[in-house]
Amino acid sequence: MTEEDLSLMVDQIMDVLTYPPIQKAALACILCGASCSLLSVFVVLMKMPLIGVSMSHAAFAGAVMGMLLGFNPFLCGFIMCLLAAGVLGPLSDRTDIAPENVLGIMFSFLMGVAFLGMGILTRTKAGALNLMWGSLLSLSDSDIAVLTVITAILLLFIVMFFKEIRYVLFNRKLALAGGVPERFIYYALLFLTGAVISSNLATVGGLLIFALLVQPGATALQLTYNLRHFFLISVAAGIGSCVSGLIVSYVFNLPSGASVVLMATTIFAAAYVFSPKRHRRKKVKECISYEYDKR
Amino acid sequence: MNEHIIELSGVTVRKAKGVLLDGISLNVARNEFVGIIGSNGAGKTTLLNVIAGFERFEGELSLFGKPERWKRSRETRVRVGYIPQLFQIDPAFPILVSEAVMTGAIGRVGLFRSPGRKEKEKAMGLMEMMRVAHLLDRPLGQLSGGERQKVSLARVILQQPDILLMDEPTANLDIAVQKEVLNLINEIHQKENLTVLFVTHDFNMIPAGMKRVVLLNHGKIVFDGDIDVALSGDMLSTLFQYPLETFERDGRRFISYG
Image (cartoon, rainbow over all chains, first blue to last red; front, side, top):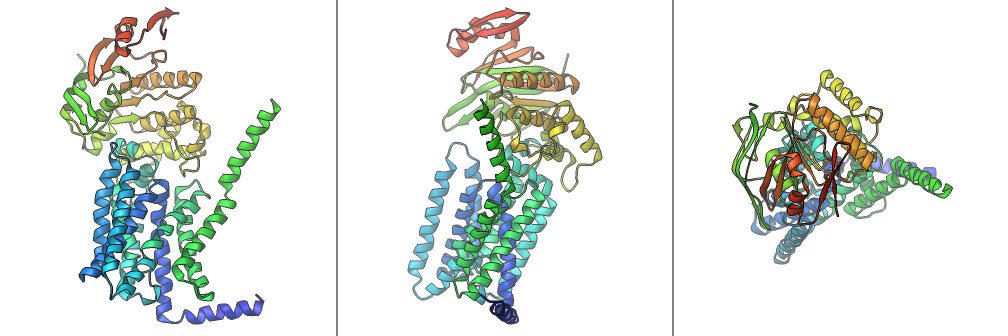
């Protein structure tokens, strides 16, 4: 690609950005990247990716059923997420049931509900497919407004309860013993996960959102030991994945959701390769084997 | 006579797998150092969980003279410190030693307020006391097991509890480190005027301050009294259903596992 081609491409992108639907899509991308990546800090540090995947499928199943029954699909997705959070929270706290099994059953049940709904929905299947993959170019003003409000609530929650969140992320049992409202923080997080996922069904869809709930946090985990920086790196990785994915999809005429996920994976791979933590661990290992060889 | 700050009466915990605690009645006075000893599944951890407020239970529990259930106020929770067995932390987890110690102040300062200079100075003093001050900028997950347990002690003392519950805090540590941690536990018991409940398996690693022992078996208290009587060969052989002998050397009691 010559310099001329590159400047032509940049001009084209700037041109495209003057169209209101594209502006809306770009704003949605930034909000989606920010909200999902903030949540991904919790998903990664609390080691609950299965809860994330179950919640995203609950939103998808709820939205499909809403569409089938003639209700607002996003509202139904949100309600289904809240129900899933209400079931998953207490179940994951119980010590007499293996949480992986419960989540596996829940996940497959919700997929079954979603595909049952899609099977019955013969006339408006395209709408259901949009819920699965998202439809960035057909977002309404209310979609953007809901996404903005939910991202703002999530951000406010993190800023207001940062010190309590740090303790809960470190160890839930110790946080409870230390006088921190651990249950409030945990359940608020589950409900916010539901809200973020259901409000993002229109942007990246119910299937691909899972990637954004894990990869930005996993990227930050490679790069810092500071929790504040962790949130910032995760948000940068999330927004970066969404915006660069959108540009790649436009330039190479590829599906936008898939491009976003692949960009998120690329950013994670780069962070993994250049991770200072990994190099530090490698150095420690080298020292140990050197000491061992000397013996 | 000392007031009882922990009072249990007929405390029972039932789970799907059976009865974990069966009608436990126990009183602990202020500043006592009580050992909780028993075989696996005897109910030691469940007993601590009930007092710490992690577990639902039947029966009566009073802390500081007030009846309590498993749900309780922040004010009561901060007065009961808890140290678990050494647990795994991802070496990449984003928390530094100083931040881990400062978490101990969070419950006491409450919501929407940050720990101030007073708490930070106290945390620094505790890190020095626990000999981990030189590690304050290190990620917690990269510390050795002994160092992490010393950080745990600093964290829990910053919480300023009246009661300290310890669930096998020296398990999985090297012998020399176990001894060092036990000495620190004795030191804080005396300095901070704490009431300590200490669960252990290892009879040869008993803190010097422990004068009273509660022996548990199948969720019931089978003995509650002086440590010298509790740690006799006959008593322990019956409890563990295994021949155990005790002997003394340099004024200290040791258990031989036969």
